[in-house]
Image 1: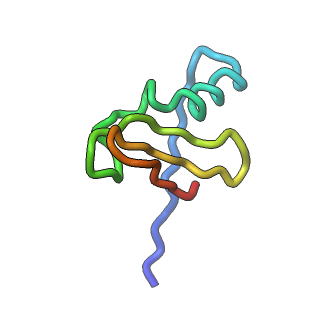
Image 2: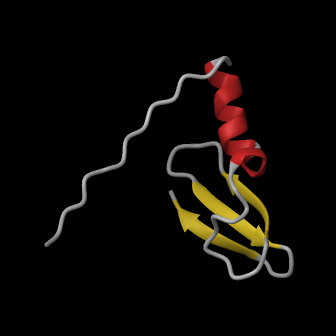
Length: 70
């Protein structure tokens, strides 16, 4: 079996932990490039549920959301 090492990245931002988490999860469409999507048509929004074992979703402008396990 091939094992792939986890990707770990650290970024320092000028915001409280709560604000950074809120932007990362609830405002993902503000910072996630619309061109980076698993969907076939233009990306409308990206959302990550703000909880442990969250589900991420992306929605197209012309179709329903597609779930992604997080």
